[in-house]
Length: 285
Image (cartoon, rainbow, N blue to C red):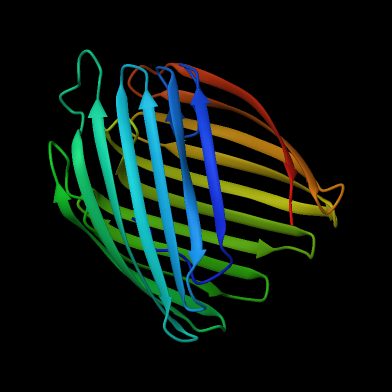
């Protein structure tokens, strides 16, 4: 579960994703044809209360089927304090001919409460607690407790981080942002989490991301980003770059390219990745 951000504008987002067997991306490998669809509803109820609903359904051909639904509520108590709470229910079912004995199947419901404070000066902080309120099958508990925040060290440098611990082990997030100039922003972050991947197996995962984004003009920007990932299953280093253009107030065009190598730790097999993407956007009133 993830408690929502402070009150802001509402939004609705829907997505459909269809992946062929063998598709690979950072943190994602599909051994069989996979379909995934879902959506997000972000609804400000009042000036101080916001409601967020999320739903996701993923089906692997003759494999794992997962369904998840989440409902979060945020209350802006005053200018400084925010209380957020949420609940998430998910179901895992494996339709494989031979189900691995390490596979997690069944249902689980998690709840979370988060208290945040924003000084509206140079720092903000939050504390959260998450607990499993119901589970079935072979599902494990998902308790987690942690502290996080962000500090603006100078007018150009900001640091944020989070530490947590729970049933699946310790977690750590640390990031920095440096506004080099009015046009260029550099960033670096590292996240270490002990979680279960889409295959249902324990994987201690780490991601180190370093990059920069430069605004070429009021209608264009470019970025370059390096990512190193490591886990019990695979290590990899990749680089991505791209450009975004807005020829008018309504139209947007972007393109990106990524190249890298993944190494399977048990077998030392290498996977070379070359991927390109493009997006065209049109905005209504």
